[in-house]
Length: 320
Image (cartoon, rainbow, N blue to C red):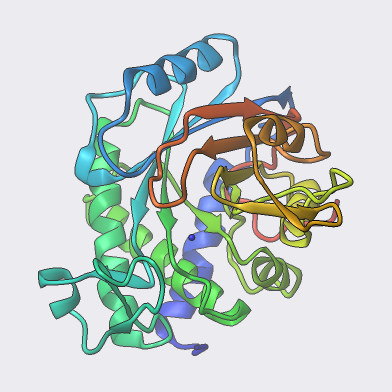
């Protein structure tokens, strides 16, 4: 698991500057803290997942709950940030896909339920951004006071660095419009998650294309080689975390092939033990392990390195 600059891009810059002015307070987020990422995207959140999250927050750690908004839970306890999933560059076959001007086969394991849409198309982005603002409004209603509400936009792997900047800058701009119109609380912190494509997110950050830092970076299908070294994409994600001071969470599956071993070319799959080892890699904030990629139901959450996180709303401060 296409660039253009105009009025929306200009609004995005102004909106992100306003966010940074409001929330990048002196001395904010300077304490070294562990981050606890709980994610449950396929159905309602298990009590055991919530209990692990609540315990982490009670210990004074930063809590992130990443869920499918179609399975919203009761209002959360203070200290938990709420991240809402959107299928992003795909749509669900049926009424969802019918809203878009065009869609294509995904060509992967999700093809029986999803189709791909072109996030480089302004009309497609407009529809997706409207969806994102709508779910942020819902999240604003149930998230604790002071909590961040963010979006986890999936299937952005077909976008280049500028394309990533376009969708997230336009989202932040639309959030500011909704805030001014009273649809979102004036004081609510709103952001986005960087999902996969770490090399392209790195380019977007290095070239200052994004008007605000992501809340955190996820990299799926993380694995270790026979020497216990993280794959290149996960290493790139870790580099983003170190330089930008944002959490990096790895997602891995028991169905992921880690490496081939021995003269007989034995296939070695990612184990829970490997997931624990990944979490010890420098600049990795946490790892979630699931038995199979076809079911997004992590059964193991491992915390990694503590982080002195960048102030909320920082714009491309990735100087290490």
